[in-house]
Image (cartoon, rainbow, N blue to C red; front, side, top):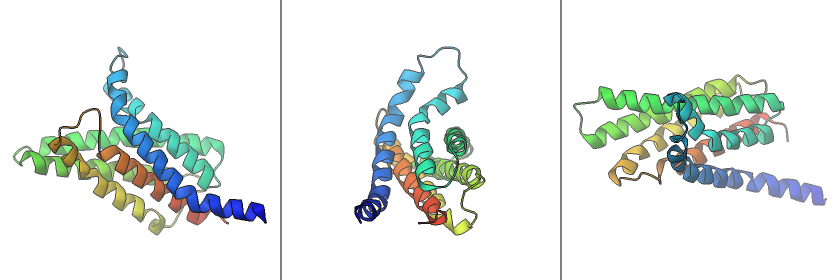
Length: 190
């Protein structure tokens, strides 16, 4: 009986713990580039990927906890997350460059939407192909929506001139992590 209560308590608090982890990794993420920039001789995309390590660890834990994937698949999900982060940053930079005639705020909104969407899509495609990943598109729609919409917070970060802090990262990482956990949980038998 106590195991049933503990299991129910864990499943009820699980998304809250994942969200808290996402907020924590989102607070740490903008602090890392100043440390990573001290590493000499590494390519820019590798440095960007290193900034994603805290969130990648959260994804590893979520995939391991909420799916029936083996440990190597959870590790692969973490690597996919780092690749998604690099793709998201590069997509945002590309869109910002393409929207050169638009005002700064509009460019930031478009770049944020593109980056948020790209990061979420790469994660969905990569994690969805794991052995126990959800095969139903509906399981991934919340993650895509949250990732895309939260990406628009890039404009707010830039308007507030935030550098070592961010509103984008905690919201995006918490939202995407919870949506990932919930999507994986739908495919795991209770």
